[in-house]
Length: 280
Image 1 (spheres, rainbow, N blue to C red):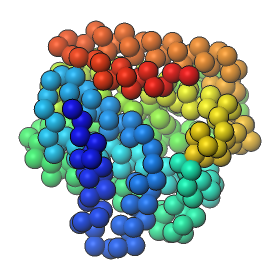
Image 2 (image 1 turned 90 degrees about the horizontal axis):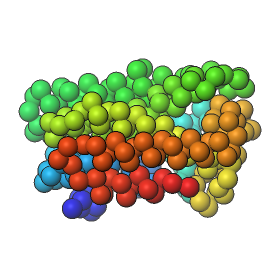
Image 3 (image 1 turned 60 degrees about the horizontal axis):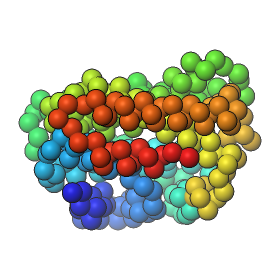
């Protein structure tokens, strides 16, 4: 069973116990403790358990590394130069509390520290190299960062659905694919199938986010709703309309369920529970 207290200790403990620059640690902790469902690290741990692995500290540390990069991306996304948001997860954004300079550096720390954490995890050297390669490809110029750039470039433009799908797969999808691939690398099983499932779930997650931007209120999503429309961002809702976007979400979630059920020697129960939480 996933020990959620141990997961939180891995996510926050490094900054609380090892980072000696206190105002940096405080700023990072603020964003890490601001809430969120921890869907990425929990998916990673649930997949490992699905393959029958007993969870160890090293697994929780990889899970923490995933959450660090995600949180760092949120800090940077909220900056005035990017989305200029005042609230995230129902609380003031990092730069509103600690200033822009420290917010930038806190995001930098959360992007870089994961590689130290994984490199010192105690896994075999080849496994560490594979995990770091995949994490870099998922978060950097081949993944999340590239997607963010394309997203900015696409504001106010009309583009084909295939282009939007590629954008979402890079911006959000790659960092949701990584938990699947990382679990496959550690378990030594089904990496290619897991990658495909992760890509599909990542797309579903972003479609869901597009839908919530126009249907949910501040209390539900913890940030300012309707900003995608105001900023003329490219979304599934703006391109297809709300109802068709809902259909695309459900179609992708069903594909994920089928994919999970096809994995060999895998108990999909806990992962399916997470997937079902994404249904609207």
